[in-house]
Length: 222
Image (tube, rainbow, N blue to C red; front, top):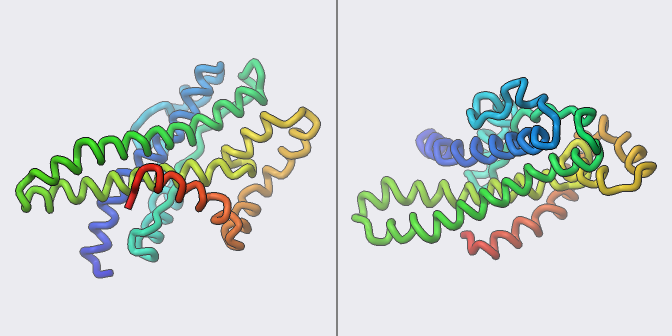
């Protein structure tokens, strides 16, 4: 890809990624706040301002590298985790699981909203607009909404891998009996190493790609 194409890909990818990760993190903090934990609110993390959630590597460098390496076919990123203190919950394990699942659910909702806007508004407008307007305005919007749906699906599927500290691990911890939950939670310090191994060996893809393909077929993407 030449420089102009890379810049174009980044400009198209940046808004969907920022929206996806911002809403994901805010939903964690907002649900936790409703369940009794004010930690995220006190630290100013219940805001839709992306600057409050940006992680230099996960939000900026990783997506940019993936855009360049995959020609924009696969983009993924993450934000700074919203701090949650389960000791503020009435039922720590249950409420932590509810707070955790809020992120992936929000991403699925964003994916659905993106597809609805794409199918019912932007694509019909592109078809009846002059060629110049369609090419300069609506085609980039179509690409942005397609990517928004895909990014949100990937983010939801990846985060539901049942390994702590991913959301799926926290949900599973909340569902397990107390003794098993305590034992399972002990792997959290090694969670990211396990996740990296799953990605390296392709096992993560075996988990999330069927989910991604299901939603792509459901939404008739690409």
